[in-house]
Length: 190
Image 1 (spheres, rainbow, N blue to C red):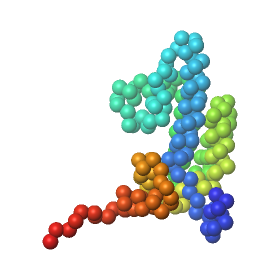
Image 2 (image 1 turned 30 degrees about the horizontal axis):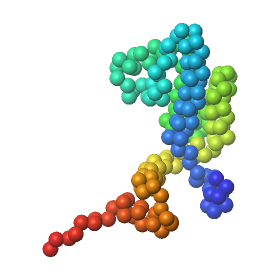
Image 3 (image 1 turned 180 degrees about the vertical axis):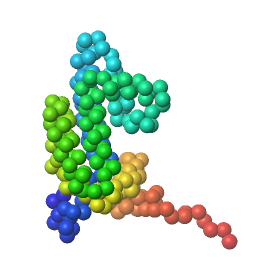
């Protein structure tokens, strides 16, 4: 962030926090609530949260109908994890807004709900999102994500991993161009 501010004119208005990273941050907070609550419930002989880790991270529309019904029963229960999940979903609703003013109002409401929730991981996540508010809202202006750059980085990291390292930077660059450059290496037949 400091480097961007130093080298890019008007950087604060151009930095966009990606929806995927916010979803991950909120999902991690929900998972921390679930783990704590699962430990407490299992000690009391209640296995409702056992094996549900990924259910809380997935969108219900992506579930099979049977799984969706089971998840709805958990989601509508009085579990702390269900409240945390509701906070996560409310946070992700920001990306449905098209105008900054109602989005700000929604985020203020959601922040208040999170702080009053008494769920420490959700409180921490809410405070983090509040500190990053301007760059989260810049998504509404620019409507861009860094999915393409994440994909490229993933492919480069794969080249690096499969080679188990390089002697120097130039060899690494050459390997990236060779494996990911999209060059047609087949000999031409005339």
